Image (cartoon, rainbow, N blue to C red; front, top):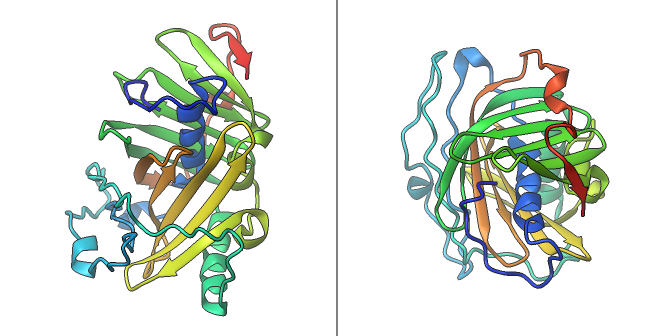
Length: 278
């Protein structure tokens, strides 16, 4: 994540760099969406479907923002942070009806169909800071996020480990891939209802939203909310909520699922970037 982003201190973290790094790792792989280059629509990030006070947002509110179509490079989306008061379920043992299970199943099938993806992303942090960059995905287990200057951060998963690299300091933190949420989303196939802890599934005429909760002993509880277009079945945006309740929202665009990816992009460099296990 952008090192300029400000996060409140958290006693749960032995390493203060770990929380923003893992928050982005949750967000990282869910860029996976396939839209033909000849008919690409730029996703416009939207607020969450419901506010915490139960007020339903109108479709006209959710549709705000220009769309760019065509084969030419898409304009950068303008992310809108979801209402932080939105309704998040307190009961992690919530039951789901047949419609909700079917909606989650369609999202699972969609994610499982993806193998490679290249594109751009724009991210808005908890303090409103905006960063952009490029991403590369090769399933199973490999992803790379390169942030544009002035951010010095790259995030790389090589199939077994994840490196959060600082180009400016020439250092990187290393985490086992098996201990991050990427273990679910970088697998060849995913069944959200079986392989993750889905705590909420909602749908309206605009979006199907699936909220996944991830609990880790040293880090705390984080949530990932995926927002999929109700009509086209494509990912529009996702929001990561860290253990302190702060949101990071990401939108993706200029997506290409057919481009051949250089395997070297997923190599973790321990020569120029010394790593430390945390």
